[in-house]
Amino acid sequence: MKAFIFDLDGVIVDTAKYHFLAWKRIGEKVGFSLSNAQNESLKGVSRKESLDRILAWADVALSKEKKEQLLLEKNDDYLHQIQGMGQEEILPGVLDLLTFAQQNNVPVSLGSASKNATAILKKLQIDHLFDAIVDGNNVTKSKPNPEVFLKGAELLQQEPNNCIVFEDAAAGIQAAKAAGMISIGMGVAEEVKSADYCFASMTEITKEFITTL
Image (cartoon, helix red, strand yellow):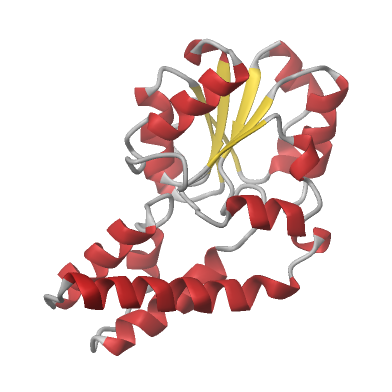
């Protein structure tokens, strides 16, 4: 049986809406209106790189100190928004797949750019279902660099080609491919079509499919 590596945002829970609101407010502080399309390209990208992209789109240059201040403001805004999160916000099909993994001794890791990943898993009350957690606190390179997934495989003591990655962002799919892992794209967006397999929702993934894979 292979190992599972899950992205967090958009795969396990839909926190993208909270990120979007927080980044939109940061954009407004520098006179820029972040579009939905631009926000899509920030998925799977680190907080620092996301801010750099927004400033580039806005054609605004800021000091290192001002950037740090905005990064803290964005994170505080995001954390405030997710305070009320609970199990009801777990995306459909996720608990079934995690339970299947646990029952069949499939090792599971998180592979997320979020520095708040552990806190979110605890709020969702599913942190105990993960054998390893790799997030923005453990890596130095953002997706599409494969570092986050390779570290997950290492912690699970698995070869990369024995890992199945669940992702909803183009950068994550690219990272999985660069790591030599099997990629499963979640969602209907064009950007996940390059994955080895694509599903609109995790409820479409059958036990038969996973067992065969």
